[in-house]
Structure formats: C-alpha cells, structure tokens
Image (spheres, rainbow, N blue to C red):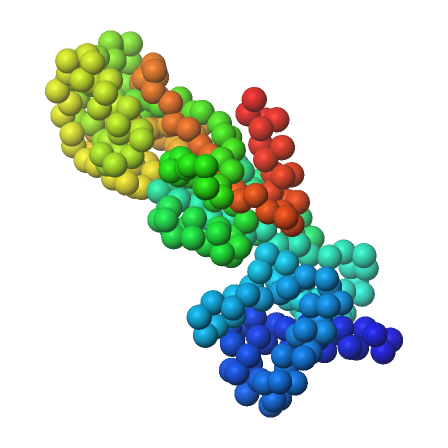
Length: 298
C-alpha cells in the first residue's frame, strides 16, 4: 500500500509539472521547493526507466515517454475521482485516442475511420480539426496520435512522418433531384453547359478537375467554390449548381434522395491518408483502426 501511495504522489507532482511546463511554476503551485520537486521527478523517471521531460529554453516539454505517462496519470486520477463508477466497471481502463483531421475533410470519412471505437466504454476519442501545418506540429509534439488528411505532406529522408494510404474515393457530379432531366447526358456536355460547385484551386481534387477540363478543351462555368467539403455539400443541397464531390461526402443525402449522382468523373479520385510518426511507444488504437479500415477498403 505504501508503494502505491508513493507512486500516486509522484504522478501528481509529475502531472503538475507537465501542465505548468516549468519546475518553478509547478513548485510554487504545490508549495514545494524547486529542488524538492526536481528530486521527486527524478525519482519517478528512475522508477520508470525513461526521461519524462526535456528542456527547451526556459521550459520543460514532455518526451514521448512523458506523454504516455501523462495519459496514464490522467486516467488514474479520473478513476480515483469516481471510485463508485470504477467499482461498477471492475477491470476496465479507459484509453485515449487523439485524432487530428484536416478542417476541410469529409466528416463522413472521419466518422468512418473512428467508427470501430464509437460506443466503446473503455475508449475516449478526442477529435480536433485544423490546418495541416498545425496538425503536423501537434503530431510531432505528441499532442495527437494520427492526422487524417487528403494532402500528402512534403517528405524527404529526414521527414518523421509515416503516410498510410487509406482509400481512394470516386468523384462525381452531384445535384438535386430537379436536375434529374440531365441524367444520361454526356459528362463533357454537362461540364461545359451547367453551373458548377468546385473545391478551391489549392486542393488536390481541384487540380485534377482543372487538368481534366483543360484536356477536354472545356471552359467551366463556376457558380461557387469552397474549401470545406461540408460547405460543398450544403451548396449542392441549395441547388447552387452541379457539385464536383466524392459521393462519400453526401452519402446520407444520396441515400435519402435529397441529392442524386449524375455520373462519375473518370480518372479523378480523392485520396485519403492517415499520417503518423515513427514512435517508440505508438498508441495501439491507431494500428487497430488502420487494420480495420484497410480491411473494409482494400
């Protein structure tokens, strides 16, 4: 019992330093001397066999082992704060998975990726969205475990990223049922004659579309552009034009009949990737999700 109390004490001190980012601030908050706090942290590091912090400037940042230790510490304290729930669910331990997703990425795709974990009482899923550079920085800082994106990051021999191809989705012309009279019409004619809803020029999908219409000698009539798949879906539902979009983005609308698929754009695919780091202590939930998703999308 004495060893457990000592470990909890060390973990509480470690969590305080991790949250503050400095020994000075944490020691002040804990009403300890900085030297005493430093000694306790070193004791915990020796017990675990890993450095938990590395110094950057005047502050301390978590190492990979430190990030894992903090996850476990947070889980331990959550359990301690709710003893009755723990007793009702003996033997369970909640694990955390932090997923970063490109802000413009299809929500349906994101849900499809994490679907095996939805409803699991032993797993907490944290979803964050943002710009790719911010997500990659968070990945490198071990603040998230995996990044979902449709943009492959620039890589060279020194790049830390592992890029996992998840799936390739077809791209179609999507419209409201009011455009059903256009069914069967040649796609080049539709692209040349109808107002179009397109992704913005910086997207990979738009680059492929622009190359296709250039090859066909077509001058597209652009009714609207958006960098967010959710906005493209809403514009399609508002009948702003024919949307160039992967059917997965509007899966529910197609199933309900609120939107229809006029035809596939041959030669254009939307690719989805998961970006991870080569880690000494990878989150096993990431590997589980990659395996399940690839088995469903060979």
